[in-house]
Image (cartoon, rainbow, N blue to C red; front, side):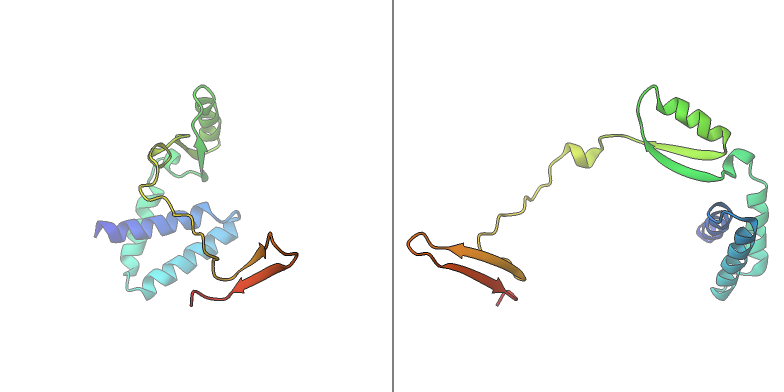
Amino acid sequence: MCHKRSVVSILLRRAQNIPSTQKGKREETKRIKAVLRDNNYPSSFINSCERSLSKLPIDLQSIGFVVRLYVQGISESISRILRQQQIKVAFKPLRNVNSLFPRPKAREKVDRPQCGTVHKISRTNCSFVYYTFKLNDQ
C-alpha cells in the first residue's frame, strides 16, 4: 500500500513542480488523476494522497530541484540562496566509487576490421592503395 501511495504522491508532486503556469499545473494534475483512475486507483485514494501532499511543510513543497557538484565553501552559500527561492539542492561528490576503481574487464584491441567500416590498406612494395568495406562478421 505504501508503494501505491508513493506512486500517486510522486506523480501529483511532479504535476505541481514541472509545469510553469497554473493552467499547466491544473491540466497535468487532471491528466495524472485520469491515468491513475484508468489503472484502477480509487478516486478516494487519489484524493487522500493529494490532501496529504497539501499538508506538507512549505520547504517540502519546493518549486524545483537541482543537483550540483559539491565544492567546499561555495556549495553551502549556493544551497542557502536556492533554499530561499524554494529550490531543493542535492550535492554529489566529484569522485565516486566508479571513478576510483577501474573496470574489471578491459576491452581487447581488435586487429581485424570491424563490420560496417572502411579500411585503407597500403602496400610498401607497390603504389596501389586498397580500400575494404566489411558489411557483416561473416
